[in-house]
Image (cartoon, rainbow, N blue to C red; front, top):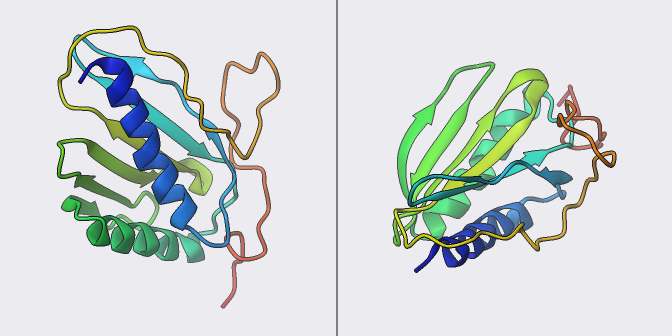
Length: 151
């Protein structure tokens, strides 16, 4: 497998996790980074996820990854910045972490593969950034479910 194939596999992993979440989260592409023999793909959730709903999101993703045969390698139960980490059967590291203002970040890190060029992801984002935006803004899309602060 070369870096491009690994990046495409990463997109499949990210797409599958995000498609499992209902109601749908809106997301934008984060930066793709290339190391000496690995690639990292990222998705940044633009849906505002309230503190009350973070556990719901982590639970949905945890169950999906386990059902998919991923091995959970770590769980961070921090109240403000929780995260879950897993590894796929084919050696890809996956994680979901909650950052500032409840912004969720998905990331896949590939195993070491053959060097090659890596194209941008072809997965269509569901939230869009302003053309030329250098920084990804904080979550700014309201969801009646994910943004709810009450029961």
